[in-house]
Length: 195
Ligand code: GDP
Image 1 (cartoon, protein in one colour):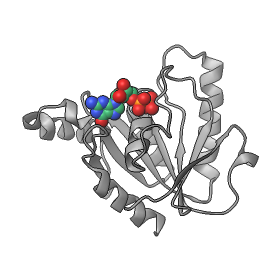
Image 2 (tube, helix red, strand yellow; image 1 turned 30 degrees about the horizontal axis):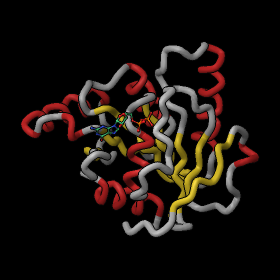
Image 3 (cartoon, helix red, strand yellow; image 1 turned 30 degrees about the vertical axis):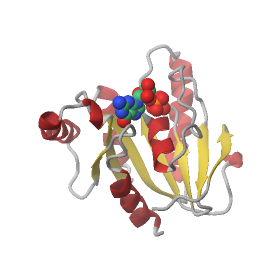
Image 4 (tube, rainbow, N blue to C red; image 1 turned 45 degrees about the vertical axis):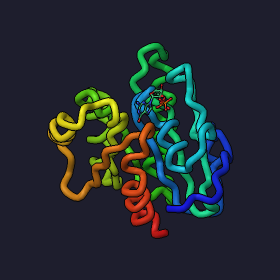
């Protein structure tokens, strides 16, 4: 995918702030610090459009990025960060849930998992919830460059097994550092978004 244009559109805190143009939306979710901002920046070949956040868990909004005037990336707040209050966590859960269940232009959820470790309980809960509700999910494992080549297949296998990856769900191994997986991921996104 040749990205010629990428713009930050809005940090939406209420549904009436979501764009109304009906363009396809791809949601990105994962634990805080999983590498979401870095992946967005790599996908659009920009250094800093998605802020690499120094305070994990602080983003409480859905951040919309418009790419090539064709498609939105919708960046979710990172989950699984211990220092947020239960009330706050419940509020985020509600916002995410409403979006995921009701947003018509949503075409695909990219669930990101740190490839260095087995999926956490939160990762597994999230994936199960998405599948329970029939949402199309692409699992993206991040920070692949941090794992020696000889161990990558093993890590991928553990993640697939622990998640119970459903047949047909794409699974992409990614490195923002080295750009591995970028073209493959764009191809998956383009397919789901009908680009
Ligand atoms: P976010 O909280 O999910 O948005 O995570 P960030 O994109 O801010 O990344 C968290 C940390 O992981 C930062 O220090 C990044 O530089 C690092 N990181 C993210 N992706 C990669 C990757 O593919 N390779 C390596 N080596 N580091 C990464």
